Image 1 (tube, helix red, strand yellow):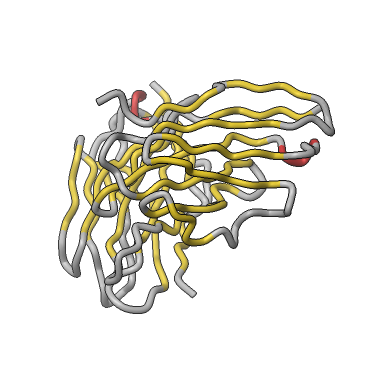
Image 2 (cartoon, each protein chain N blue to C red; image 1 turned 90 degrees about the vertical axis):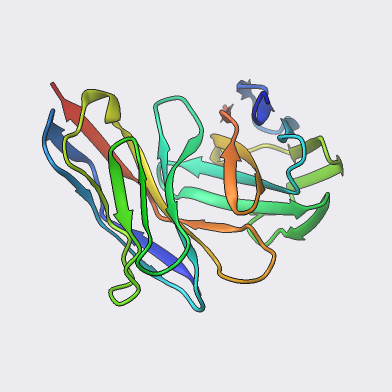
Length: 114
Length: 111
């Protein structure tokens, strides 16, 4: 079945460091890919998305490129801030059909220190 | 729009009691999802609805769990009887065009 695998956390970085959180997926068809972010005590929020191969999603300085050849959607940011501390979830929605069902990874906790 | 609204935000109850969690989705969204989040198992999809009809409840852990969506603006998740292992944060999410919008969650503690 479809699945998402992301790197285990926690990831601890100093402010202004470069961030990469790895995400790979297994899916049939052509899924859309997403990164969601969860700040402490809140629900998940969509951070960025990509709907087809080679698309790059970007938002708030974060980027991720849909790589079909490596089945990956790694999240990157050039310079993290303390306010980026949160849990990041990679997810996919099954391509085609009418369902909006998302399959989430286990989440990666990012802690940014001043 | 106010976003997805869940209530209660926190619930503490004793084992054996009935728990009802409530959700108001974003107006116009045609999908509604119930997720459970725990440290051990992460984010689990329990059930989802399309146009108020349950589509997939394979994630519902046991018969003690039930969910309803009587109309497009309201859904409930009920646990009866509750057990300590049901302690978790329960999220409701609604969507249109594959983007999910989550509520702030209901934190359930069963003693």
